[in-house]
Image (tube, rainbow, N blue to C red; front, side, top):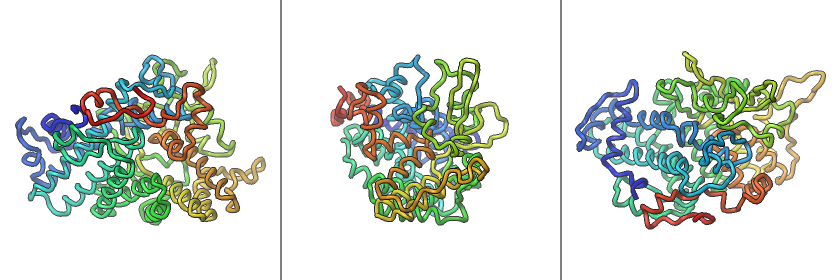
Length: 478
């Protein structure tokens, strides 16, 4: 199919163009018919520019990983109970916000299907051409191969969790990709685990540059912990999360909530930097921060389902939620990123993986193994960070979760802490509702007759079905 097979010549040239078009990258201008390995993989610097170009492309685009209007963060957030949609001028956006998606939705196709498959293609091109090249050093090959495997697993993770059974793409051969069949969940996760274990073995512990904008060994480990969690492999999820948590020389929970999302924060395991051409610190800040009453051009505000559920003493509600007020009313918005537009000095990068999630992963894994006390200890690390200083009016604000909870109640505490800690980040809430089998009760109550159990997966885009006879539409869609 045209959009999944990603025909080799246009995509190769797209990869070359994204490298050449990014400030600070090696400029190359190869002939149209020349193979990438002959033009890019001829030195360490040029090969490295290929990977840097993929990250830049992710952030320049408006979809998937950008944090902007067609990203996982926004669209999956609309599908859950954390956002209220204001962009009623676009029926495609309304479909996400009402859980009434149609297979011909263009945002779905370009932002959430085509883009991640495009980055998978780029990653496969890097892997294939590194094998061919004898001009790239061994250390650089290991670094770039590890990053390419990370990117491939990262994209397959979101494709699988948004669409269900999807093709696993491991080659740039369009003849194979054009008729690729959907893989089972087990097959997809087996591939992700394999890629991330190898990525973890190849990547160094240190970051390849001074900033945390490219994955190292611990980024691969953190994503692997999440993948094991989604498989309900509690033992390995705990093991991988513990490895990251124990790297105290690199990672710490920021005691000040306002410091957590700054660029190169000690809490950051992986961040993406918006290219200078976007003119913003982060696309999330640009998208979410209100400077006027919400209207048709506003993407979303935070729902009262989220904002009213916080404990009054929880500082995450005070510091990570902003309020715009005028004579007509008040509206709350995600305020984890503090800069909307116009800053001459970049102070924030878009957070991809952070240490707080690893504590949440380990807590859930431990509790599911019957280790409630140690699991609750992990939750209380985040509760402590969110706790205000004691005062006369609140001598014990936001107290610790009790280690004597039953396993059932402790898992409910995990669910709540994930809701409060990870809101407006990468669609975590939507994915959590699905994997914990809570979508039916939560979204059914919210959407009423508009909700169907099959809404937990998005439809396969109509054009992909037309182009690949081996794809089958998800249940509940025509």
